[in-house]
Image (cartoon, rainbow, N blue to C red; front, side):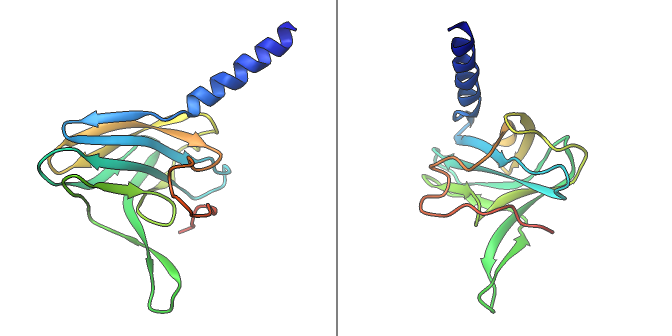
Length: 163
């Protein structure tokens, strides 16, 4: 009986660790930063989150950095002229007044290059987001097996892209 109780407590703790986490920076509200757990040989990982602008002025995400990677870039998926999905780096992402900037598989994301370590499933790692008006905001990115259910409505999740 005690073993079952300990197992249940361990499983619940893991579920709570993966539960949504939020950050507030002035008028910006950042929901559940996450990354998909990747094998140790993966050359890159991506981070996802949603930035809501609850204020009266627009803002822009200008970049990001993290101690687990030498380089972080803002990227987006776009449809090429040939109909194929491609990734491209963007210099900034607008966060409109009363709107949001959604970083999700198949859309905007923060790509992390030259990893000095691969965070494990259930772990969190720091990511600093650099906003034009709100300034620097440090968040903790939860490493998960799959995307949160609300991350990309109606979209089937596929593996991370390679560069």
